Image 1: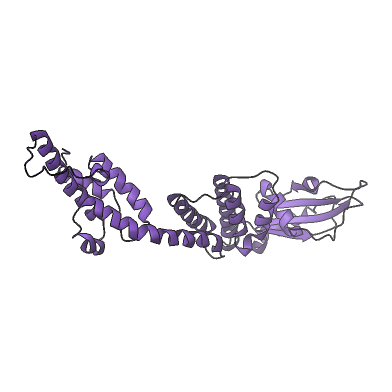
Image 2: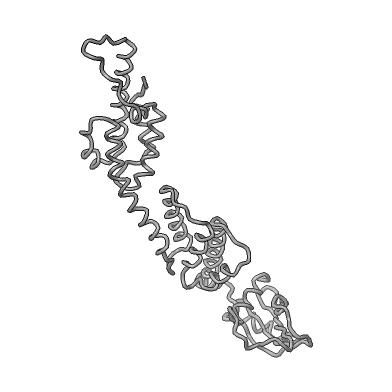
Length: 312
């Protein structure tokens, strides 16, 4: 006989979500584990020991076996009923045996789960991320949908999942999305999550710099032909004009006698006086085959600012 105290039952049910009609397969698996743990699941799969015939004498062992089955069936039925919401408890509490109760639930909710599978598949492929919400928050919502795939034993190739999520990124992430799609190496779902988190953190940092404290450094570019340097008089000027207390970059263009300049060598920075302020001289170098008017994925100012970050 399975000896189960009220304390044990309360502890077990505290860990089990009440079934309210949704996610039946997951709830059924959890209930199955619980019933196996308390050693009463056998009454669902094994029939009740038969009563003795009218003139048949029954051994004490047979009588005890049947009594044990009856008691365990009541315990099993109680576990299942107590794992339901109040509404479903009221609907099913009159069912006589655990096996009958188990079968009734399967007949009704397994059919509904088949419909639920189609809904989950559509929900994933129809999901689109939007601007104005955290991308990581939306990414985690998608992962929650994918978790339900596993619950329903639905398989979806990880490459397809990752590619689909990249396509779902919001409009403001267009450049980042294109960069991910043109990577030579495939990435898995966890790696995609890491890339999204880092990118979102960087965007938050940039937004904080541009919209937060007015005194925070903001790059301002001044185009000049002073390739050789900046006049010393500027030190006095910038020290006394509060409006210029930010990141200042004096930009000069220079043509080199080579065909092309590698992008990573395009910008040459040097910090100039006054050193207590963020003042830089930048020489932008081009080869005679470099097309200065070529449209790039990022504007000239963005490229310059990105190169400048390591010096600020």
